Image 1 (cartoon, one colour):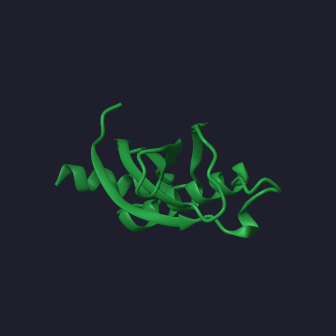
Image 2 (cartoon, rainbow, N blue to C red):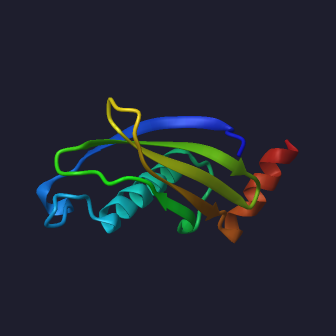
Length: 122
């Protein structure tokens, strides 16, 4: 997949409320943090209105545990007049260990597509 540009990182520390009885991070918490990160990026870096994100693909590779510090990074893998696609990576901080990745697609709201077409024409 071709990366168009890289977006700033975000950090998350696994707390007691985020883990199960074995101190492993709950998958729902990880997904929620990935979604929150992707949504925040789409709001901050978009010049047009986007619909709610659609999960394209998710891959959970390793467990994270209580007090682990996670690094969230994303790259824009595709953008057009109708959609924006982000690939979110989650790694342990200071360790080259990947926790997971997810691909999200944001469709451009129909009422703002004409603004993009005008911008592209000028």
